[in-house]
Length: 59
Image (cartoon, rainbow, N blue to C red; front, side, top):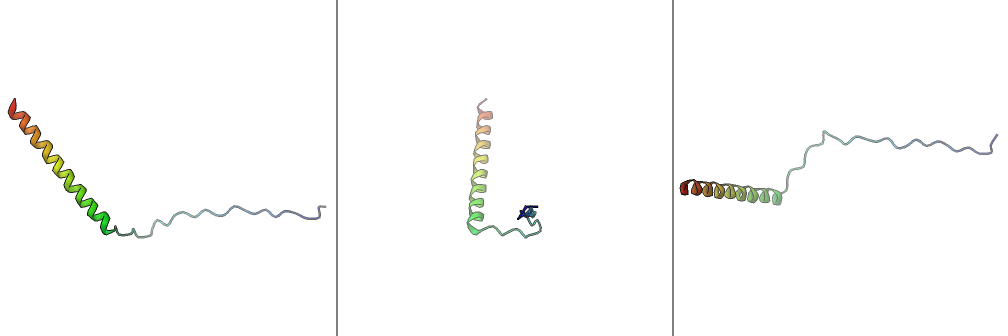
């Protein structure tokens, strides 16, 4: 019989991330950036529409 024995240590239990935690509100800076990006995207779309109308008129 051995003089000592090693104890088996089981690996730590993995915990699933808490899905029920409420989402953090977005920061003020993030909201401002979103607004600027949205306005810029609208402006680009309007510019493209105007160019298409000009091309149709030239034909």
